[in-house]
Every structure is written in C-alpha cells, then in structure tokens.
Image (cartoon, rainbow, N blue to C red; front, top):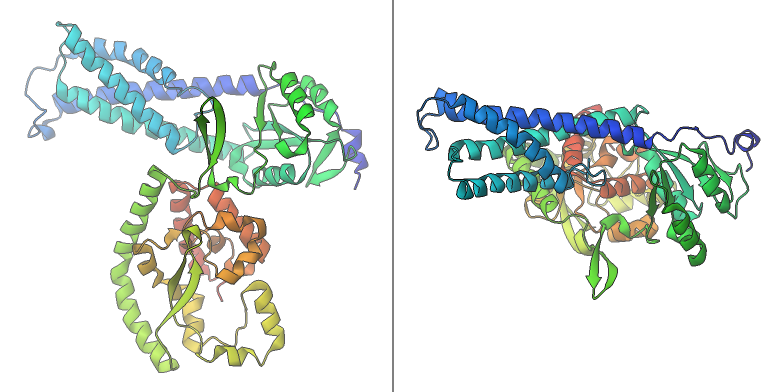
Amino acid sequence: MINTDAQQQLYYLPALNVQQTRRTLLFISLVLVDLGMFVFSFRLAYYLRFEAISIQFLWLYQKEEPPTEFYLGLILFLVPLWLIVFWLFGLYDFKNLFSGTEEYALVLNACTMGTMVIIFMTFFVPTFVIARGWLVLSWLMLVIFTEIGRFALRRIMQTMRANGHLLTSVLFIGANEEGKAIASQLQSDLKTGVRIIGFVDDDLAPGTEILSDIFVLGPVYSAETLVNQGGIDEVIIPATALPREKLLNLLQTFVVYDNLTIRLTSGLYEWLTTGVEVHQVGTVPLLSINKVRLTGMDVVLKRLLDISVSLVVLPFFLLMALVFAIAIKLDSPGPIIYRRRVIGVGGKLFDAFKFRTMYIDGDKRLAQYPELRRELEQNFKLKNDPRITRVGRLIRSTSLDEFPQLINVLWGQMSLVGPRMITYDEQAKYGKWRWNLVTVKPGITGLWQVSGRSDIDYSERVMLDMHYIRNYSIWFDLHLLWRTVPAVLAKKGAY
C-alpha cells in the first residue's frame, strides 16, 4: 500500500545529526557520576578505617590519629588514576555502556586492577605506606558504589528513552523478512532507545508502509543521500536483504562516516535468540551459536534466585497443599497431583507438577462439545472448560494450582520466571521459534503471565516468550516477579 502523505515527506529528515552531542552529554554525565562515586568511596573507606568506633573490633582497625592530610592528598591522586583505569578498561566506550552484567564485570575488574597498582606502588616506593584496611575497604566501596551509580544512570536513561528522549535514529537498509522482524523487535521495546526513521529497499516503492508509521524512503542507493542529510545515527543492514557485492559496496561507503554506527545482522535471526560467540579458528573468525541462552554469571544468579525464593515460599506451600489435598479429594475422585509432560531445556521432556483441577474423565466430558474441542486444538486453552472441577476452577482463578512446580524449580527442571511450559505437540505453534524456546527453562510465571495470560492470543504468547528470552536479565526476572503479584490478584486471564 502506497501512502501519499508519506511519499511527500520521503526525504525529510532532521538537518542536525545529534548523536555526537548526545554522546558527549552522556560521557560528561557518566564521568561526573563516576567522580562522585570515587570520592565518596575513598572518603567512606577513610571514615570506616580511622573514625568509625563501631568497627574497632575488626582486625583491620588499629586505633591511631587519623592522618587526614596524607589521605586527602592520596585521594586527590587516586581519583584521576581511577578515571584512567576505567578508560583503559573500556568503561567509557559506548559499546560497553549500559550492558548490565558485562559492564558491572568490567567495573569489578577495573577496581581490582587499580587496587593492584596501589599495592605495587607500596612495594617500589618505600615512603609510600598506607593502611591495608583502608585499601581493602576502598576496593569494596568503589565496586559497590560505582556500580550503584552506573545502575542509577542506566535506569534514568531507560526512563528517558521510554518517554521519547535520548533516542537513536536508525535507518534500515532492506525491508525483507529479517529486516522487518528485527525492526519490529526494536520498536516494541521502548527502553532500547531506538527510533526507526524508515527503510530503503529496491523491491518496494517509496511510501510503502512496512510497520506502523514506518515507510520505505527510497531505493538502496538513496541511503547515502539520507545519511548525508543528517539525523541518522545508525544504519542496520540485514545480511539476507542484499547481494554480497551490493552489501560490500555499502559497507565501503559508510565506513568513512565518523558519526555513523553500522550494524550488520548475521542472517540467522531466528537462531540468534541464544546469542553467539566469535571464535578464531586459525586466522578465520567464525560464529559459534550457544545451545543455551544463559551462561556464566547469568546461570548462577538465576539459580540462586530460584532456590532462595522457593525455600522461602515452600513452608507456606506445604500448609496449603494439605488444605488443597483434602478439598480436591472431597470434590472428585482422582489423584491430588497432576503430572503434565512438558518440554525443558534442550528439548528434554519432564513431568511438571500441578494440583489436579480436572475430572479424571475430562476427555469424555469434552467430547460432548465439538466446538470446544476445536477451540482447544487451536488455542490449547478453554475459557469455559467442562473438564474443570468446582475446586479446580477456584484454584485456577488464583493460579495456586501451579504451586507444586516449586518442586520442579528446586530440582532444576523449571525456573520461577521463564517462558510458558508447553507440551511436545505445542511445538508446532512456535514455528521457526521453537528451537529458541528450549534454550531456557520454562517458568512458573513470566511475561505472558503479567500480560494477560489466557486472554492474549497464541501468536502474541509466542512473541512474549521470544521477547523474554532475547532480553533476559536478572533485573527483568525480579521485575516480572514483582508484577506477578498484582496480576494474580487481578485474576485477569486466569481460567
């Protein structure tokens, strides 16, 4: 469909390229935040080591007259040193900023290296003597408060981006399936800070609407003209959208633009939900696709969250299980716990536990309603399911039927937060995304749970699961756990 209004504004873009100005402001803000945290951390360490009476019992405390002038001069020397160390570790390189755990790991490494430099100085400069307790406390305070400062700045940036500020203007070169999928993903998450200017494509007429209010601005050769007009910060090129020769020509054209970031996709968008690593085989760089989405510290933090919360909740679950066991047995014959065969990480099948909420002859009851059977085959959910018992309907409305899955969580088969657990037959509903689904553990709750549960259609459920897998972080898990409580109390979509 050609939009004439869009065609009249095809080549209208802001005349000012704001990326450099924005990056300068962010750089200044980050340096100021870091400086404040450095000074505060060194000063707090001094207070704890020399002035805080409450820690006199610690081995690092030796009562003495606080050498104020010496340590004041030392702090004035160390603060710029720490800035240099942070710069050497890439902590002011924008590709490393606001990346979550990766950035925090760099902060830890930089603070450790800075502390090692001080230790070396005490060996090689005989007159340079400092308290070991102050040094240990300084390292600890620097790690904690620098990361807090950067975390706060990251949250401020995300809030500003969600409100339309500090956005990065992006031009897509190629409007094929991969380009549309990536653009749709970026557009759906406001916190990415991406504003898609439009597409250029040789196969679609200028003015063709690709996504809501996003149009084709012209053919591929017009990309350089659009960039020269200003207002474009990044160019994203789906690798599958262009022939190799045309792709190389474009890269050669844009590589000389200092204020333009060029991003090239891999051409394997459906697989890359799991993430990739670049490995050097001889002199050849090759992409290695991770078979699981979470690795390293992400696995450790998520497992600690699962175990700690489960152990806290488990005593309440045991008391509730006794009450439900009696109610379920009195309501209808059959077992108390229902085992549902579902898919876990790597496609391995396991039994997910739930309180039984259906009659044991539920299939016979459903057979009396052919229209409901067709609805179930299509959506794998029924709003008015004749198979559900009276007690089962009450339990489902509060989502308490899923509490036995805490056992699955403790066994490591499930996680508190994750994508929906599905049966083997449901895989077909995920289409090309089904391989991504088995790269993480299914969750008791997740993005689908807080977004309406059964009230959303199946295709949207799939996209919500993919969004969670792509954007996983421990903070995202905590956020979803927090949102689960009001979602369960509201009972929206619970049936």
